[in-house]
Length: 346
Image (tube, rainbow, N blue to C red):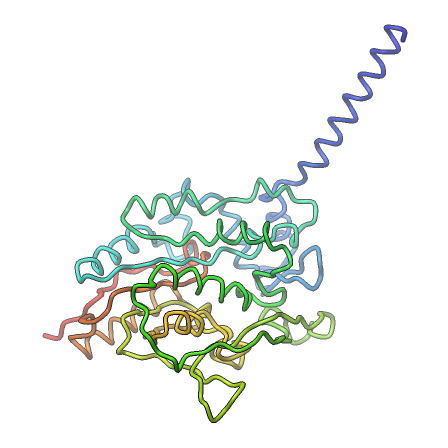
């Protein structure tokens, strides 16, 4: 080939390769999030993704817009101007002084696990990770269950297993059960033989979630997700299980936001007997004492727990573990107050 022609061909190939590489890299996630926020009203509850049947909570995107939490001053960027790290670390230390372990279970944002559902052309490598911030928590003495890594591994291994609801702000029934399995294996030593707990075969749950505004419901398809119910077995009612309610006699305390209630409480929580607590109880064959609320997972459940200790000075006598489940956006949007693990009456 003539030298000049060869150089021209090589130049064209290099340009094509560069163009191809650029296409593969895709859009920076931070730019995608900023564009979505800029093109939606601040009062909007949810925004549609690349697939219009996938909706994303706007407040969660505002949380993701902050980026890597390990590199920012949370006392400044947090909406309530409170830093979660020292508050959580002190809570863990105070529990440890009572002989009780704390397991922190932050639920990562849906768009961080499914960024291509938000924008099909996004570069997934640019999504900010929670893992560096978890490292700071762990260095401060807090044990964290890293669901981000768990969920991404599950998504790679089982892409057909949906980890979040498309039309709701919560994890899916599959994810709630998956996390319950992981936590149960960690505390297997607490298992008690109890044949009254059981799990039912898989069924399909059809619903429109909390991200669907009533006026937009007609334009969004109802989603159907598999779930299994778990609870108390009644021999007189084959094919059914009953909800096992919060029990103060159990060695485990579950505190948190609506991620503890979804698929457990029914109504706007979508189903019963299929939530995280239900499956955790079934796996361990013991009941859990629960303090949960639909919002305010940073301090609300801890405040209710503190009230329970005031009413019962022996509250912690038989407790072994506190499992604290909340949406990760609480790190930048929650009100983090120091609250006592034990309230003593004067």
